[in-house]
Structure formats: C-alpha cells, structure tokens
Amino acid sequence: MGVECDLDGTTAFLANLRNENTEALNTSTAQELFKSAHDEVHEELGIPGDALGPARLLGVADRLDSHRFVLVFVLRTIWTSDQIRANIHLAVDAFETSELHFYLPSALVTVAPTMTGCSQAAFFLYNLQL
Amino acid sequence: MPEDVRAFVDSVWAAKLREHPRMYNALKFRFQGHHHVEEQVPSSSPVKVVLELGFTDYKHNIASLRSQEWTHLLDAKKDPKLWPNILGCSVIVETSDGLVVVQKRSNNVLRL
View 1 (cartoon, each protein chain N blue to C red):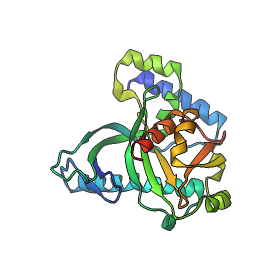
View 2: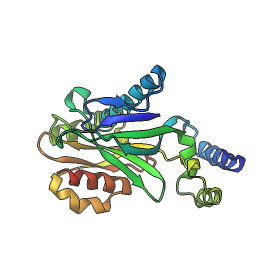
View 3: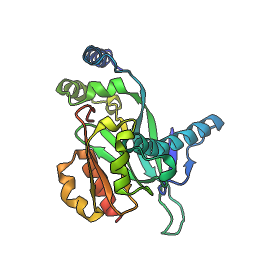
C-alpha cells in the first residue's frame, strides 16, 4: 500500500495506483491517518473537532531500540490553555493523563529531555519548524 | 510467520489476557518505509512523501514489547519483516494563547 500525503495535512493524494480498489484503499488510509490525529486530541483532551485546525504532518519518528514508529503531527486549537484545563475531565480518555502542563514553544527544549523517546523525537521535529 | 515466532506471540498474548481479561486484539498500521515524491514545485510548497504501510496487530506488538526473548528470537531469524513496526500517532497541540500542551501519561496506559 502506498500513501502519498501533503505535509500540510489539508489533502491526501495517492501513489502506486494499480486499480480503482487500490486507489480507494490508499485514499481512505491517508484520511484515516490524519483523522487519527484529530481523534487522539478529542479523546485525550476533550477538545471538539470544530475547535481544532487541520493536522500538519511534521515527519516520522523511528524509535531504534524497539522498532516503533510515530507519525508526528501538529495542530492548533481555538481553545485556550484554561479551557483545556477546565474540560479535560470530560474527555473520553481523560484517565490516560495524570498531569497536564502548558509550555511556551521556546521552553520545550528544556523539558523534552525528561520525556519518553517518542515525545523527545516529536518535540525535536517541532523545534525544527519553529 | 515462522512457527516458533507465532508460538511465542501466542504465549505472551495468552499471559497478558490472563492478567488483563478485558484486553482485545485489533489491527494496527505497520510502517514499512517512505520516500519523497520528486516534483518541480516552488520551494514554499509542502513536501510530498509516500508512506509505505502494511498491517500488524496489537497482539504482535505486545509480544515484542521490551522482551529480550523476542529480541533473541528475531536476531536469530535475521528477517526485519517479522518486527511488527507498529505505527503510532503523536500530536503536538498549540493553544490559542500561544502555549503547547504537555501530558504526563497515567500508569493505566501502556507505554509503547
């Protein structure tokens, strides 16, 4: 399966087309990947879809020690940090979060080294595009 | 999948189910590679990449999770296709007041 994605996250195209079924599969796969970014935020933070901007794919992180890969997305919400803090308990998967913090983008460099490998990679990619 | 690898995956999964009876298996995307699409586009345009994906499942992933036995088994096979290469999703959220959300994961959540 080959999936071609615009890295601005607004559209998803296809590659390696062999027939119409492959095209349909690739299209739905690309849509699913970008949808998963929105779903993740909605389920874990409780932010509704209409308060989220388009997801932008920054890259793919490869965790060398465990052969695990992570698509790293960034997206903006029209919610403030106070709104998120006040509503996270309503999120379906609120139980997945034990602490919630907010940082200025420029401060992430100092806190990222204390995070898991996947999060470190995600913020590394994020810092590259600041 | 070789029989000994399949048996190992099944045994780890069975043990996990005894520990957590509500767990269930499900399909996950498997990352197999990527390449850039060469196009004559303005430098300001988004870069296009092709992601090569397949399928794996949660059960296969659990079996490979920080397991020395799994690593030894796979090292002997020398076949990278046997690794689940599970594809996850990490999202950085920017708030309207200019901050970035950072969550600490609960102990209730499996750390991949």
